[in-house]
Length: 472
Image (cartoon, rainbow, N blue to C red; front, side, top):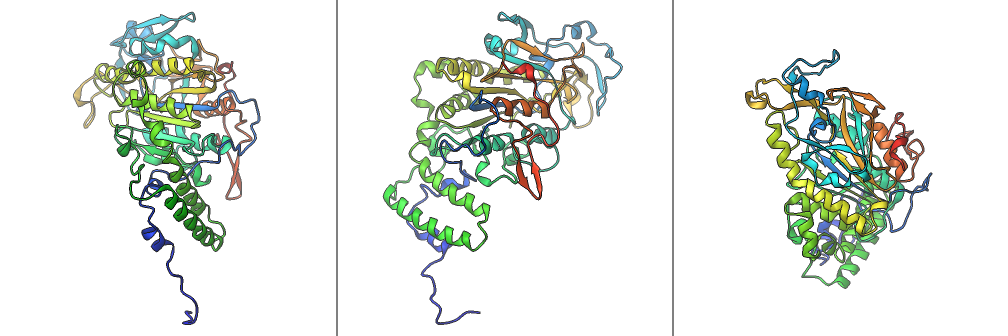
């Protein structure tokens, strides 16, 4: 019921946002920053173990790179080429053909003598610093559920991402930058923001998404500059907005979504002073730019180093959002093209981290959502264009590698069978990988929990074992 003698506010929150004079210098970033980070230096959950790695750079090879063509050397493919697979349990949800040899040469590298394909000859210079897990396995051979499993620990339900769990635990080291950044040139990958969302964790732990195909700072981070309103005026308007939002929140039982939005405004304001500098690779010396090489992948790998150098906790770099490693045909051409985009830059990143003293506190992860079959994929309607020179999805066995903080490099962990179809020795499920990542970051995966809907949830649900061999 409205009483005519009741005072009417001069303006409401919506009107204030439209006319407060802040321009969009601090506010427009909120669409890029669904939620902000924790306060600088704020550990939300006390670590359970010594922190071996403070930062993560996750290079996500989207689409399922072939392990038997990259880091899982299988000489038996040569002898069985064109023949029926020798193992009786070679099974997939889709029929495949005969065994296909790898079109790529493998060589041994480093003191460890581990085999690496020519596709990653530059990265192989660091093989003595890399732990190669050849016995990964997942649940199903489909992209969407496997992406969700790798990124959130659950293939069906919406759950917080790995980066969200880590920033929930460790917080941020830099108030002026988000703690969790996801970069993908050309736009979203499959499943879009579900790959890095915070789900039932407070919204401030969701990643900030950046389309890293843009090179100009004004397009990379829209509205980062405000030429119409001074910082003092912005601060005054933002303080008023904070008071209005606080009043609004108090009437709604401190809604966490509103609180996250309030914090996103604050971070957007603070980012004006540091984000442009952090994302601007032109500030790097020419020798560094030359080392990483040209292209979107090289640039976002260099940006990743600049971000973790400035305290960003978790950076996920997508490779293959538009052109995935999903080569059901022409795998020789497709895999070579994609490796040419990233191999040199990955090696440069590892060189860079080592030279700057960041390698021992940064965990670098490479891999996709699953691997590919050692057999050729049979042509079928609507797929592989009638060719028989590609491989199908394979979740029974694939490879990922880790390097950097707390990782014992120069080793191969586990193995697939003789032709690389199925993980058979020291098998590592995605839940085990997640448990190991958390351990390196200082957390017991069974104890880093969040209470929601009457239950204590965790990244690994009721699964997972730490892969002790990974840890130095």
